[in-house]
Length: 401
Ligand code: SAH
Ligand code: SF4
Image (cartoon, rainbow, N blue to C red; front, side, top):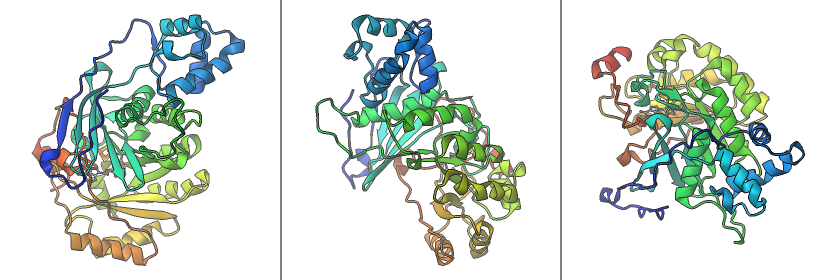
């Protein structure tokens, strides 16, 4: 593993590094099951199927789980509290495989973007954003996206496939590897977390890959492993209404919603899935979420697009719409990408918008764009290999401009 590179804060753009990692590509070994991403129940079943006596299954599962998810061990022979022949049995039936890191770019602000390759040669992006006292990992759930939000770079890329639970958990493990975050045996326990939060805000619509996202988050939340609490995970959805209650019941994480407009007419253009589940239907589903999860606020994401959704009237309408929902409004200055049919709102506009919301009693943070120099900012992710791009004309036509 390469030593982590950290560009000094405030370093010039020339400090951006892009190193092609030389981790050899692991070929899937014939007939073996990759155990990364299996839930406890699935792994237990797999262990029994591989010949673990029923009576021992619970204990073996616990031991293996700790090795893989607490210690980050990849080699069965290093699992010293397991008998030698049991280690051999595991190695015969299982692998512990992660996506391959193809490139790692480090922004002048310390943001890291990893391009990882998954089975089939597809690539997705994972972004690590270090902040004062916390670090957030932005994880992808699909290769591309079936939805075509007109301001989103990923939306210009066709859906290639859903990620498996293993590929989602694998993104977290790959980042922990790179950051050197696995605990060291015998060393004093270090409570500082480089990856303290996970956001499902990378490529794809997580609620169109529900089962895999749920299983992956169960693994990541498990107390005897990576152990990130459910309130440290935020799932962002464009508004797949039928899956919102399930998210509350089966994952229980925090929810962010890509709201972005205050009339159906504008939202239809920005987030076309609004034609299926409009603003009123979406808000109904959101009203129940905090009660179902016994959690705090829902984050309303609102991308600031010059002259499209950033007027004072919009701000007032937004406040009216969300009345009664415990909410925080995250204002995202539009991150431009080549060929994008929009411009970022001016700082004055964004601040005037934020003030109206703030005065109505809601937190209205303005998101600082991170990793812009490496195209790692929100909505800029798009894998390098999947070049099935729509033309500029098609993007503009969809945006109704
Ligand atoms: N598909 C999910 C999660 C991924 S997108 C969703 O749509 O919520 C994560 C966030 O980035 C969403 O709020 C999305 O609307 C926003 N986003 C997409 N493109 C953007 C861009 N170019 N600039 C700023 N935010 C963008
Ligand atoms: Fe897909 Fe989200 Fe981008 Fe819309 S904003 S195209 S749902 S990734």
